[in-house]
Image 1 (cartoon, one colour):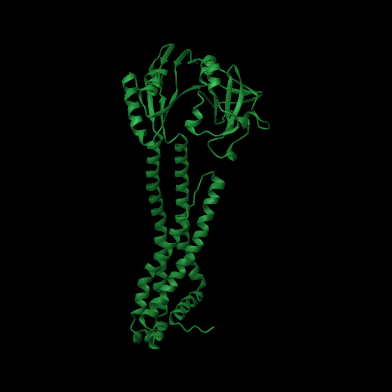
Image 2: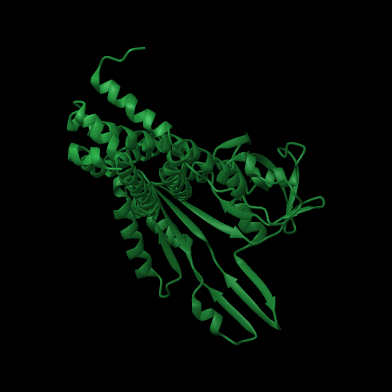
Length: 424
């Protein structure tokens, strides 16, 4: 096929020149290839880790303010045979919040019971949470089977419980748990429902280990009747007796804009009513905003580190092209003598550098998409490749080819044709 356009003829000449030295061209593209792949892979790992952290924060509820009981450190310094400590949040705190702040939708009490859970020979130690029916709405837990706790369960102190999917699959690996009975400590409770896990269902284990995540929910009234609020621990001839009315209070705020104000009001109230610092306030919305800011900084740092390898690849291209210009000095002189203009020489060498960086960019994008999949499959680490990452990495690689090819192209175009023809 005859190419009549001078521009297309120059492009074809540039590509043909690269094909004369295939190995050198391939080795030159490797720097760009690994640079592009590292940019995509590192951003994917950073995005995955950040999204995982943000998802955990979102699961706490962006419109919630969470108050938690904290054991005072002074208790650990006592050397008495019997150590008694009452600390943490109380029902009075809950009622005070519920009836004082109009922007609050509900105030949900949570008491945690440190008891072992059994079904036959299968044993586990999940979090046993005594709470109310509105806990599910405030935390966004989704019913998988059966139902959640009801107001009737609370008022009748029913020995009913709801299992998270992790616990249900551990205790009942081959059957439905709804309607079955499990033992928590020394008490027997009927399973009335199962809620979905926080993470992907496929990651839930069914082995016989006692180290099983997840939760069990039962009515607060029934939990207090069965287990009370006092816990006794025996160790080294001494007894630790602790009494905690509530381990957690979830304040469900109607409007997300009011969350910071409600959080500050809760801090002021607890600071006023509690002599000891036996509480903490967690605001998921604030944590989420901080996580997003951290994500931006993290991505900039990772992208900069990976971008250095792209820069090194660009320097490699410039180095090779400068050597190529020296090798082809006589060819450049002949072309100029036959009527080629400076812009034709510039285009020829820019085409070569752009093709080198473009091919390296395409291969780097392919490798950059494969690496996150391998990392996720082998290291159980979440990775997310955003659509912008491959496009950005490829665009930068082509831009680097053009930028680092400008000087060699300019040097070739500005050679004296007479001197170039004399070059041996």
